[in-house]
Image (cartoon, rainbow, N blue to C red):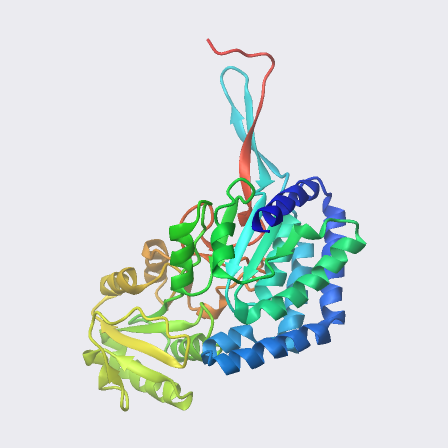
Amino acid sequence: MIKELAQNAAKAAKVLAVLDEKTKNQVLQDMADALRTNAEVIYAANKMDLAQAEKDGLGAAMIDRLTLNEERVESMAAGIETIVSLPDPAGLERVVGERPNGLKISKMRIPLGVVCMIYEARPNVTADAGALCFKSGNGVILRGGKEALGSSKAIAAVLQDVLQKHNLPVELITVVPDPDRELMMELMQQDEYIDVIIPRGGEGLIRHVTDNSKIPVIQHFKGVCHLYIDKDADLQTAIDLLVNGKTHRTGVCNALEGLIVHKDIADSFLPLAAAALQSKQVKINASAKAAGYFENPTVIEDDAFGEEYLDLEIAVGIVDDLDAAFEHISRFGSHHTEVICTKNELTAKRFQRTVDASVVMVNASSRFSDGSELGLGAEIGIATTKLHAYGPMGLESLTAEKYLVSGTGQVRA
């Protein structure tokens, strides 16, 4: 079944590779409309997934990711409409230059081919990945976790119905109908038909895919995101960034998991942070230096940072200077998103230049580390390995470049 599924997706992708942008955009707009029209069907499927999740004792973060409501379905539809408004990267050319022998060199963006998404309790990935891959000229195979299978199948059925109405192969957006692990292992061996695998989920899933796939993997590791409060920070801005980054949604990869504070500003900032976090019922895990500013914190060792809590919980530490902040982030960060709060432009520039993360922010909430918020419409995910993509993956990240060489009969001596 899996080999046939992969073959059909590869065959369908060849049809899409020659589809014009105007037709793509009409199909996508119809998909957005269809999601809204069929919202009740999607809610019903999601309700069954949620009931099973509660029965299985899934954690709050997983259930939050799994839950679909009117706002989230509308967000999926609006994300597709943004993709409609963006230029199709496939086929775009850029000039590289001309050689002394007269050869003219350029590069053209081309689809990757077939993208395989392996993900857990994130039914929105079905719509986001389906639309992004369609616009960029790729077929997509979606292997969701059992927790979201009903929701994912319902969303995919809506998108496939639109494909069918436009006389396009439904295999352009394929859902693996069985979440069995053995089938996933077989899927990861289909390197003849699948061009790249993108896993989204827990660290265990991503390591399993990386260790067992014969197909190139673009990793989307956990989000251990830090907020560094510089000695030149504006205190109110710092509090706003902290509260929004930690409590706006806790079960997502761009939520804050670590707070590090310059020692010179600790006495003025940390009491404010303690009050703000306490009002939101955030559990505090603090280093010995930082613990005294909080009521009933859990004191942790200096090597115990780096946890992805995905809950109302955060780790807090104090550092001596900017270099110590760099060292902390380098040791405990996950190359996802890092934020500095400062009024010092030189410090801000040094932070952005030095910190190794796919998104580095100055005086902005970590929650903006998201494809839709950064103008990509939606995202496949946030790549944390520096291959051809690093950070939120939108349309361009789903393409590669090939060289185009034009001559007038030149031969190599």
